[in-house]
Image 1: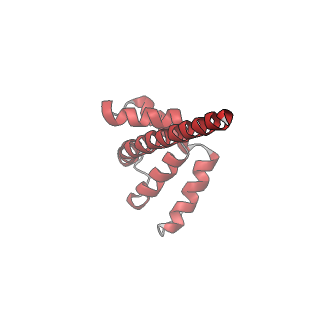
Image 2: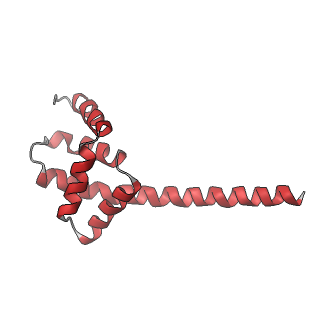
Length: 111
């Protein structure tokens, strides 16, 4: 009986950790969106205005946890050349390119 109580308490603690981690991840994603939007608007003039938001979503969705942390940090300390490099690296990934190609027709544009 004690064994089941310990297992139950452990599972409850783990689920709380997952919820906290999800909240941290969501906060990092929200903070990163403004930075990515700014970078696309100022450093990637070839991106049509109509596609900045869908492209931002594709970049955020394909960023690693470390990259999200770096982008969220830039929201506080400012955009640096390494931040732009991070966005460029995420844009170069095949998964991101697939997402971008799907975003354009949805916005009524072609790439």
